[in-house]
Image 1 (cartoon, rainbow, N blue to C red):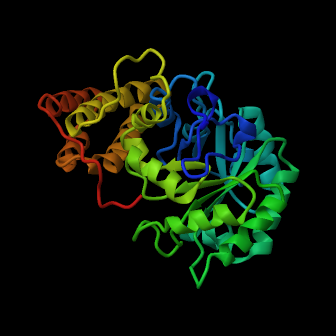
Image 2: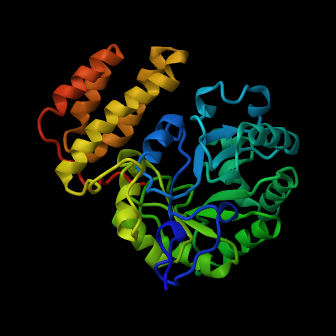
Length: 365
């Protein structure tokens, strides 16, 4: 019998999964680490929709291992934590052993339960320092970065990757990943777009399937997840051990609740009824979440000044409003608003009439 609900989740193809976070994870959807987005406020919004009893892991924004040793963690916008927030997996960027060692020590004290190494960042600055996706150009060097991180980490270490340019088969990718597991990686996440693609073109899910079949460790799939149905489709088509979603999960955090319903989980704590499903129901929920975002941002970011609250909200809105037919109008409201109070009033007016949310956007994930 396939297990579900509080007893774990099935791999929809094989009926089995490989354990994540020491076996704590029992729910197959997680948030992607996104600069400017995967902060405490967004994590709080999404956690509120996690089914009762469900456990997943929670990445942070990308953190630079050269800066962490000199920061007071928990006192910067990127490292704020909610009260009792658990299963945190901060993502670090770097390749220097001393910086990584000191970063890991501080992050463990901060409350990290695993460390994720970024080997997928394609930005020029990361390439210039020979980390991020640059590590994928040298398999032995990439494995060495994993080895030295594991050596200094008392908690699991994972790796987030982009695809390697496909030749005639996926063997090159498999040969790259196997040494990462041999050096102690607990799991890998694959976003099957190359660095050159960035967000263009479709993610090649077949590479997730081939990697999962070619290595012994857990593989998390990432790319082109916009709906609950996409999560289930990726699990069926790739046999991945979990699914990671980025901007679409930020836009519709209730995707956690929708997926839980499909897999037989009870609703989120304190919630009755059913998850939003129709375009109008989702549009209404999106409006509610914008107000919740401002509430939560006021709690966590206001001590840094109202300007930070406004900047975080506007960035979130620009990223997620693309799923609304008139999302640009909503963005304009936030741009014109000179204070949180003015933006709240603009939101109330915009959502006073029914608003529909599109299931998909052409913006790649």
